[in-house]
Length: 80
Image 1: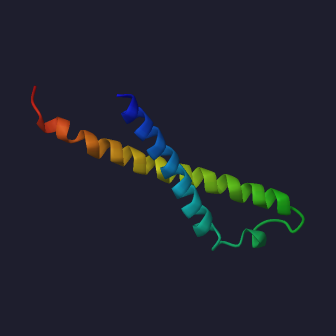
Image 2: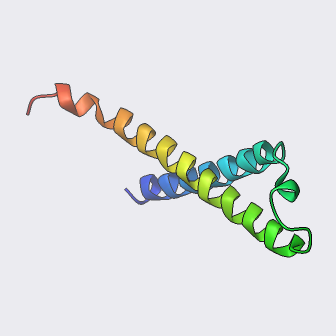
């Protein structure tokens, strides 16, 4: 039982880190420096990091929910 909880925790951590890294990579295609003021480089970097975490976590939560729900589908067809 405890090993299943540990596996779920590890899956969640790896999924979040993976999707945050993919989001970081994808957001590098956008030029935030053209959208923001020229003297706010630190603020732009903080915004970049926060956007990366927000988008990556949302995608990861979707993936983990989908994984959980697809694992629960067989219970729909098993009658007690």
